Image (cartoon, rainbow over the protein chains, first blue to last red):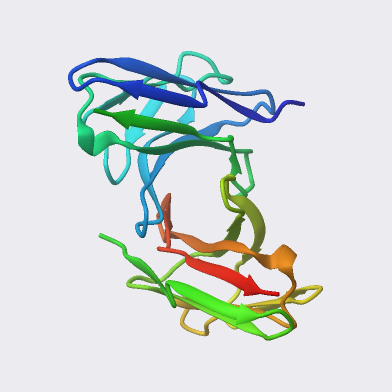
Amino acid sequence: NAGVTQTPKFQVLKTGQSMTLQCAQDMNHEYMSWYRQDPGMGLRLIHYSVGAGITDQGEVPNGYNVSRSTTEDFPLRLLSAAPSQTSVYFCASTGAGSYEQYFGPGTRLTVT
Amino acid sequence: GQQVMQIPQYQHVQEGEDFTTYCNSSTTLSNIQWYKQRPGGHPVFLIQLVKSGEVKKQKRLTFQFGEAKKNSSLHITATQTTDVGTYFCAGPNFGNEKLTFGTGTRLTIIP
């Protein structure tokens, strides 16, 4: 199993550009989530999904969209990038009946 | 909303010394989880505590969950260079399983 994979590893965007961060897991986990990590602020939940077709907002959802058309994939879309979205983004998944979150390797995003 | 704070934010210790990080939630937690993130890496699950007053050990690591289920601690005995990283606690509210992460404690070891 590859676990949780994320692409790209690094990305530089200009203000106003849009892009999609990809996340996939091959563990048949129902629960998937997106976090952003900023220095001194821990991990903050952006959006999460409890299963295909179901998504909900986390703590910091503004400026981001998600969709969950399959169990495996949970892409995160930045609609119009802003410098405040410069961060490291982690995708995570959790199996049914478990609380343990498996994290992907992260995407380091810089918005200039 | 729920807040989860950790202290200290940073800790520098000599190799062989003990280390403790404390986690405090503004609300009661159904469970508490601990994660470790090595520099440049991603968070990795260490353990979950569920019961009030629970204590669990993993080799040199001891985890405690408070009686009121609002605080927790991680204690490392005789630190080694492999313990370097940031330790996060995380917990969901009762009735709301969205996970809130603590601010983390960054541990550095002086050889």
